[in-house]
Image (cartoon, rainbow, N blue to C red; front, side, top):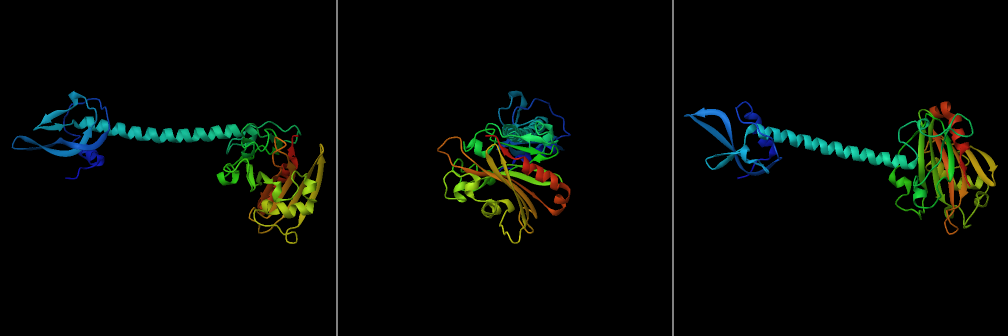
Length: 322
C-alpha cells in the first residue's frame, strides 16, 4: 500500500495535538518509511483507536517511542518538534544560500573597485581634477581585460558624478568567456546616473578596424573614418553619418590622441543621444594585441536635457594612464 508523505505525517500530528503525551527532544527529520501508530483522542469500548501512518523518525531516542501491538508509537509532540526543526532547517538553508550569493556579489564588487547600486561618491576618491567628481581606476582583477591579461591594472581613469552608481554588466557582454583572445567588443564596466543617462567602458580588437597590427588611433583613421568603424558599437546597432549629425573633437595629451564624439542618433538602440571618447591601447607585452578602448555615454531626450553636461564631462575625463 502506498505510503503517505511527510505532509500527511504533520497533519496527523496536528490532529493529535490536543491529546496528552510525553514531551521529548526531537533528534531528526521526518521521512516516509515504516508504519507508525498515532493514538487519536477517540475512545471505543475502553480502547484507544490508532491510525497507522507511514512516517519515520530517524535516530529516535529509545525513550521517545513506545510499542502498541507490535507497532512503533511516536509521541505526537515529538513529531511536531521534528516538523518545526525541519522548517527551521529549510529556512536556514535558504538564508545561507542567499547570504553566500550576496557575499559572492560583494566579493566581486569589492574586487572590481565598484559597489553595485551604491553611489560612487561613497567609496571612490575625489578626482584630482577638482571638478566635483570622483575617479574610477580599475585595479587588480577588476575588469575582464585585466583578468584576462589584456590590460595592465590601473590602465585608465574615468571621472564620475558622485551620485552615479555602478550597474551589473551581463556575463556575455563582459567577454569573460573569451579572454584573452576575444574577437568581439566587450564591456569593461558600466555606470548610470538617475535622470542623466549611462556610461560604459568598451574595448574592440583593432584588427576589426584596420589591417595595421599595432595602430595608433590616427592610423586607424581620421575622426570621420573612425566613427564609421566604431559607430555601431556606440549607438548599439548602426551608424549613418547623414542621419546622425556628429560633433567631433580631437584631444592630444601626453603623446596620445583621443577622438571625442557627440552623436545625435534618433532611433538608436542606446538612445537618441550618444557621446564617446576613443583611443587605442597596447597590451601588457609586445606580443599582445592592440585594442580600441572607449567610454560610451547614452541618454534619452529627457536625460539629455537634464544631464547633458554630466555625460559630456564623463566622456571628456577618460584618459589612459600610460
